Amino acid sequence: MEIVEVNGVQLYKWNIGPSSYLVNPIDGARLLNWYISLADGATRDIIYWPENAPLGGDKIGEVYGGIPVLFPFCGASFANGKKGFWKTPKGELREMKMHGYALDGTFEVIMTTDFGFTAKFLPSAKCMEAYPYDYEFTVNYRFSDLSLSCELSLVNNGSEKMPWGAGLHPYFTLPWHKGATRKDYRLLHDAKKACNILADGSFAPIGVEKNSFGDVEMFNRIHTHLKTGIVKFGPKSGEEDITLKFGGGGKPDVGSCVVTWAESETAPYYCVEPWLSMPNTASSPRHFVEPKSQKSFLVEISLI
Image 1 (cartoon, helix red, strand yellow):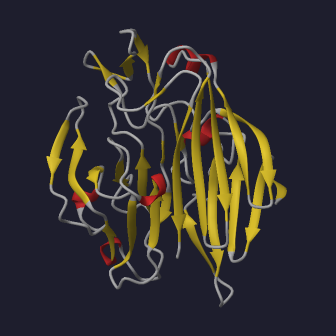
Image 2 (cartoon, rainbow, N blue to C red):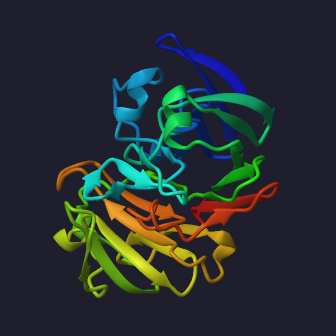
């Protein structure tokens, strides 16, 4: 691992085999870019980061790139018909920002190794008001030559159970072959159901049959009722698949889902996002951490 300064921002970099990982562990514990060096001397971005985007600071949360960490809840929250709010188990109405407060929050690096790092979330006053619990939330990355793992861990130091529904929001470079388009790539999953979230926070069921990234029905689709926590995507030829595995790859926790999303039809990326919970479930959570205990959500991304 080496520490490099780019545009005045201190970043951490790991070079492991053909893979290079660039991280800002302080601002959002954000993995900015993962690329591999090819045999012909060229490089291929696995995780996309836009040129000239801010590498740190308050604006990093607005960047469509890298792997944002979503905590305490994924997606939008609604309460009493109002977007941006949630109702606690005690019935309190509190604000809840889209995707939570970690993606542009401050972290403290508590450990680095030759193969990764662990960072602890330092909640802002606004986050503490929105999510009023005594806890420790950490992000633990481990890197290898052709894969990474990220474990999101929540320790409940308080005396009441805590709801949560964390996740990741990876921006994958797609297409990654010269001359290819999105329609040349497909998603493989075993979800039994799929839906879209509507403007009022409700869900509209849609089919799960179509799997081409060129299909408009893939935009903002939530894949649910998964038989396993394994999703693959890549060229229709079946070569060079990227494998996304969460929860160890077995039957995922109730409420877990995979979201596919991109900002537009021409964006140079596509997000394939593993979430512990559906959007708009903060007020009716499926996952809790009991007092004086810990829960984790593990995600692995592999090229093999």
